[in-house]
Image (cartoon, rainbow, N blue to C red; front, top):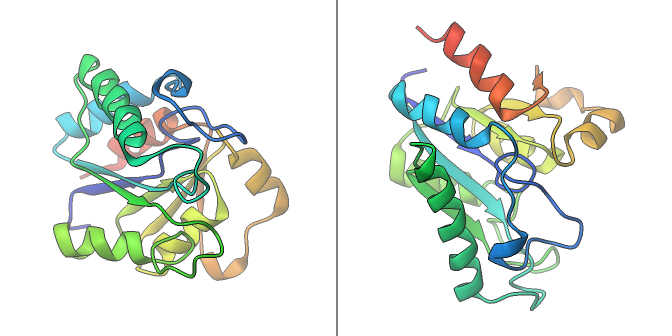
Length: 183
């Protein structure tokens, strides 16, 4: 992998997920170890970006200012752990909007490619099938974490067309192994 980049989903990977959506900064709660994991990637020279579907915008559950406040809380929490994100890519559309950026479509990944270059072989860490599908469409290495919706995703079975999918209990466990294996 020549591009020292890691792509993360947000809800269920960095922070707790909610079937009722994360609608306010107070509803954003980090997953244990996620901030430290991102900090360790940063210290090892990796750029870390988030690619997240946020259909709550299209559904009217929160507005752009509130999403920015949620992300400010996340960035602040990460900074306290010595971690940073190099970018946050958001699909604001609903599932029926027909956009090209809502995962499993690869539009968010295309935006990342435009900003950071080729992503072939770059790990994309997600907790849902659509996260993995968006990454695989652009040659990313799919990594499933069992936090958030990850356990349900694994229990449903992963389609063979994804190729090999690495599975870890959490982002922290993935980073433990990834940094151990990194050249």
